Figure 1: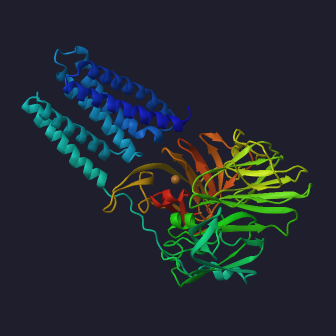
Figure 2: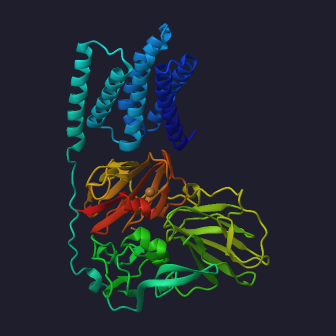
Figure 3: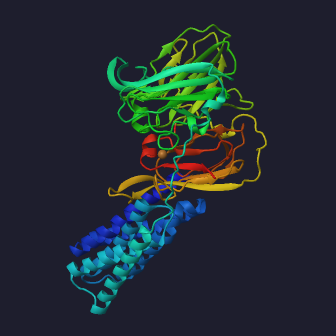
Length: 579
Ligand code: C2O
Ligand code: CU
């Protein structure tokens, strides 16, 4: 069983346990004896089953089990200790067990709320709040179901509840390390890169574009989605002038995966101000890295990218021979892009398909009709890629794969989620059942460049209630906090830095660090064995633990976030900062 499915199973069992106890309590209050006993037995069984899931999770890593061991298990145990013996004694009047059963139900519900609303890391404050809630709910039940306990017991209960509530609120509300993200962005290094050799201008504006035969409202660069393809040759100096015609919420250009100087990174509020209607901003950087990249707005990025403010950036090593095609996949107003394209390619021609996922979720790509190799991922060439046949690849949000092959005499087709997007003729192959390539074991390995790390950070990805500000929100969190409250990670120039990224939530988080490519060290404790993987976007699935490392060689203040941009918007963004 994967840790992801254990997490899901534990959640379901916890709901069953709470529902069983609460239902049993309600049924016994209503004197429905068989029903009460049945539900209570279900509650008891589910509570015992949780001992198994919690133990298994604890063995997979403390971050998956912390609040379950520290808060849920003691509360459930208390519930069983109180309700169990009364049930066994089987009183003549089933109503006599109503309150003990409800107590067990409240205890399990409180534990469940801690997991769903607070998560990792567990804290004393939250534990005390849970206790206060359980005591208070039990006291209320006692009052309404009669048979209240002695005065002394009720007084003790009130004192415990109030004390727990006060201490818990105090502890839970204690301010954490509130980071200040400095906004010092000097004139920047843009002038230092030399005379531009390629100039582009991109004008952002609202537009109506045609997608699969229908007009849809979009935000577009130069009136088209995707925006114009920017191409360069290694050594070029690019100058890109961004103008905003009428995007009221502002635009910027972020060079996704391209490790530009910080001042050119295009993150509003961090490296520049958003470009408002009527304004412009000039980006300049040297194209010193060949590969497949893309650009997109980083102002209200969730909406902006979804509406169409993105395009391709390809830097080629030298004028190329053969067929070189970019396939930027996107979903615009629920319709898939790009439109299918068919061209005939002479047998023997080298072909490179540059696959780009500009959506916020993973896509599945399958190349049928030819053996192929994955030549590069996220712009970096792989070492010794072997030939693959009838194998699919999963590309995370923001990620890129370059597939290469020699055109055969028979047709070839590329499918994205089962839809043909590029072909050299009709290929009837069904690709849905193909195995998926695991890039961590693909290609030829090389010794890791570092064996020791100057700094290590852990990012635990989760969901939780974020109580900052007036409107509470159900945020996507990192280490229990949501943007802008996540402390920045501070490194020094030249450090080797290791990140451990843990996903204890129920959804995939495509992780993306700006300004650096990270080398994958391991996933779920197993070292990567294939070609060194230098990634800028990688899917951390539920229950997974990734360790990655990089050299801190690009000073500045860098966004480090989930590239499901709705998640990034809902809290899952922090910053890497050079001291
Ligand atoms: Cu492609 Cu910060 O994003
Ligand atoms: Cu996410």
